[in-house]
Length: 359
Image (cartoon, rainbow, N blue to C red):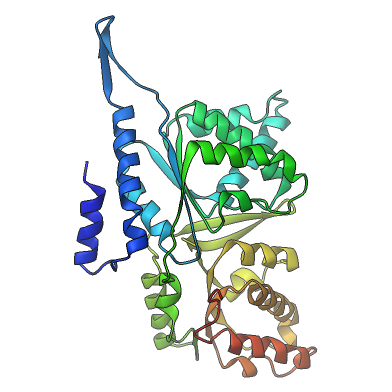
């Protein structure tokens, strides 16, 4: 097993990472957890047992929280890549959707305890769950997550998670929050809570001072988008399924808070405000490609595009765009042209290098 501190230092020396005191303070915690996980799987021989057996002891996990772009996901990925036990990395929102789907299937099969098959399936082959961006906003998730995590811990599954919130602020002001509070106690008992208090937003730094709106649609703009996608960590991207009011919405490519989709992926589908609010809640950066010239012939797409931009704007999501023309020239004839001026203005404002920076 490779030493995490050595790996981290080598990445700095190679120029892959920049030295960061706040990040460096996390690496020993990760290494300790790595060693504990390895020991938990090592054979333990007893004079009372002629056969080798493995311990099933629980290893305390880690809850990394802090502002956007502080390197939480990068550190967790580093740990995941060198995990000594079978592990799974998943966006927390997608994981909870899987859990809810599993519960629904169990209920259809008239299983008395509909959560139990879900727990069995999750814990069958893994000993470590790596969650990106833990946040809980849905009451259905809030009501089951405590029992779910408690059962996973009892089965020896350890957890490492990232979050923008300190545990006590999870599901803040949520409905029936008093029923959720034991989960916070459980998190603080079973996970080491660590605040990454770095002054540097590395994700914002990659975009600061760089163009984020590319036109016209040609080989050059396509390459610019590819370069940004490559820089923001494209290699581990997977589709992200979002569930909105019983319907499914897919972001074709997603990793570490960064999503990539075409105009047609998001604006040619029968999506509405709730869908776009869910997207804005789930991503920190959206790369939106191939915005065409808009007209009265595609007015439905125009309305959806306006709603999407409004949702992204209000949520302070960083938007990177490739389009056929400048914002003001995208929609110049048809109903709602005057209202579209606000959308064009917002697209301009979202190009500012300080857009999305937390004050």
